[in-house]
Image (tube, rainbow, N blue to C red; front, side, top):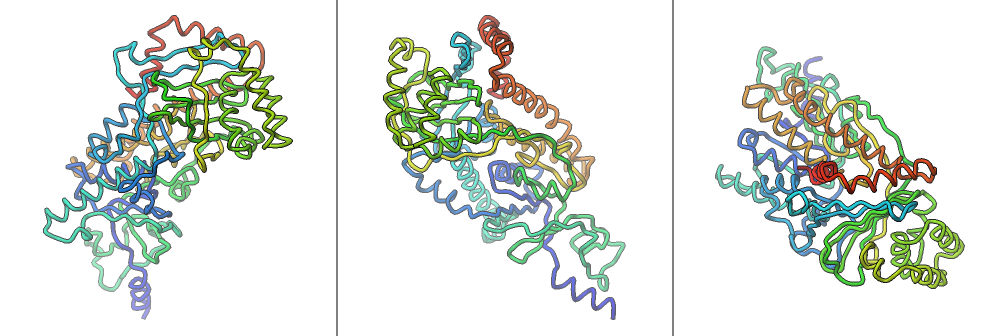
Length: 495
C-alpha cells in the first residue's frame, strides 16, 4: 500500500532528466548553451535553457532591427569577439551596428591638466574594444542555436524539435529543491542499477520546478540568472560586496556630426564617472554614474535640455555644474540653463574644445534614458556539488571599465574547458572534481579586476584635496610610462 502511494505521487511529478540546465537567457547563458552545442566533446549532452522573460523581441531583432540603437550597449573586448567567432555566433551579428574604437581619453574634473590617453595603436594593435548592443549579441546567439538545432536534426534524421537542447523562454523558476525532497518509483526500480534514467533513488541531481508545471532533474545546474541568483541561493554560496549608493544613467545620443577619432571619453566627476562611447555615424552612448538625487534629475530633465547637460558634464567645472543642477531641480523644464551652459562654454577656446573634448551632444534618442544601481559583489566560490555560477550570478562590477559582459564570456570559456577535460577523462560533469578547475581559473582574475575597479571608483569619487593632487600627478605621470599604459590597454582589451 505504501509503495503504491509513493509510486502514484512520483508518476505525477516525474522530472525530465537533463545533463545541463541553464537558468538565465542573457548573453552568458546563451553563450554557454552555444558553447556546449559546438564543443565536439560536449555537444552530445542534453541541455535545457530556462528564461523567465520572452525572447521574442530578441528573435525579432535579428530579422528586423530597429533604426535607432537600444540603450543596453556594452564594450566587447577583441578576446570576447574571438570567442564568439569560435562559436560561430559572430556570423549572425549585425556588424553595421557594431563600432570599433582604438582609444580612451580619461581626465579629471578637479584638475584639467590631469589627462591620460590610451591608444591601442601605440602597442601595435588595431582595436581596443567594440561597442555592441546586448540584444544584438543575444539575437546572434539565438540564430546560431537555431542553426545548430537544424544540424542536429539533419544528422539524426529527426525533426528539429527533437534536437538535444531546448530553450524555454517565458518560463520562470518556481523552486529549486534537493533530490532528498523528490519522490521516486520505488516499486519498479532496481537499486543496483547505475543508469539514472531508470529513476535511481540515490540520484543526487537537483530538481528545478518551473511555472509551466514541468520539473527538470539535472546533472549540472548553471546559474546565469543575475545578481539575485536563485541558483546561488539554492547552492548556499555566499556573495560579498556592497552597493555604492550610486546609479548609472544610460542613454543613446546624437553628436554634432560623426566623430572620426574613434575614441571613448571618460571624465571623472566627484559624483562618478561620465563616459561617452562611440557608435556608428553620429550616434553615441553614455554611461553617467551619479548620486541617487542627480540620477533622478537626469531622468526627469527635459529631453531638449538633456543633450546640453551631457556636453556640460564633459567640460564645465563642477561648481558650475552644481549651480545648473540646482536650477533644474526647481524646474526640470527651465530652458534658461541653456544660456548658462552656452555662456560658460564660450569661455573655452574653440580649438581647445575641438581637440581635448568630445563633440557637442545635440539630441537624445527618445525613450533610451534609464538608470540602474551600481554595486560590487563577488561570490565566495563559483561552484557547489552539481552547480556552477557564471556572469552576474557570480560577480557584479562597476561599469567604469566596461568589463561586466566580458567577464561573463571568460567564465563560459573557462567552464567549457573544465567540462571538456572532465568528459575526456570519463568523469561526471557535475562533480566538484571537474568543476574545481573552472573556479581555479576564473575566480582569481575576476577578483583582481573587481578590486581594481572598486579602488578606481573610490579614488576618483572624492574632492578631498590631497587625494585630488595625488591622483592628478598619477594620471599625468602615466602618460610618460608607455609600458604601464600598455599593460592597462591589454587588460581593457582582454589580451
